[in-house]
Length: 167
View (cartoon, rainbow, N blue to C red):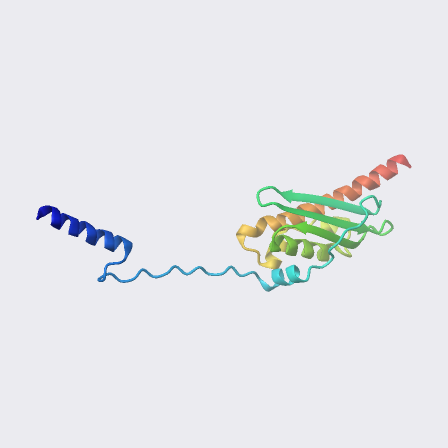
């Protein structure tokens, strides 16, 4: 009799653990909320501005190629500079990555156009992230955009210095 009672008790405990006991309330399902992006991210992802590239050997073009090994995003941002005025007259990008990286690239190319070289170096990733309302987990995308701008300016200035040295 003792063994029989012990088995029944263990069976009741097992049923409670599994949730099949008739006296137990069903366990509520866990609701997973979808992750929503700000409308600006969606807009720049769906309609990216300035996609493409320039000839990297053009002396008026600066190319910045940056990547984030942690997430696999790679961004190429190019600027075309008016040599007389020093203004950026055009910008292009190609990005392999998530929607936030593409949106950050698109915004960066929009923001650098028509500005002097010194001005674009003041563009900070926090401004891009705030404009796009990026969640903290996607801040690295705006950091890539800032790094790409700096790399493109550096590349242009190196080409300019090299041309001046050979002249």
